[in-house]
Image (spheres, rainbow, N blue to C red):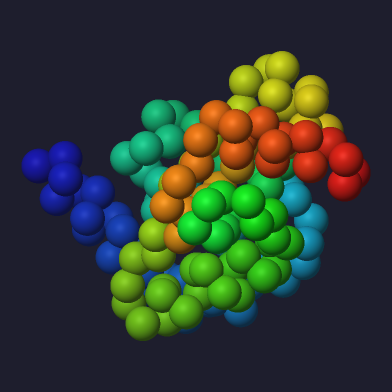
Length: 135
């Protein structure tokens, strides 16, 4: 029953965002707008364990080795919107940062990854160091 509810919520979100994909990735502010929050909360409903993207600073990573940090606008334009517009689910997962990692990264709360095959603790540490460097 739980999986049926999650699946129906996912398809509801896809329908909603197929029509409003123009409000996704419209800027590169790491704090998400309302449409981005709703979409990520929906897509990651099973794995986010109560985490809510509202007012959170988010970093976006792609690439098979998890080393490509991209802007929010590029992330949505290339890794999310094309799949949503086709009625498919983008490959996406998240890594919530610890308090120490948040400080080290310059205040990021979470890393959202798409199309990443391998994301090791070493990859995560390098990403966090890069986020601190780029601020």
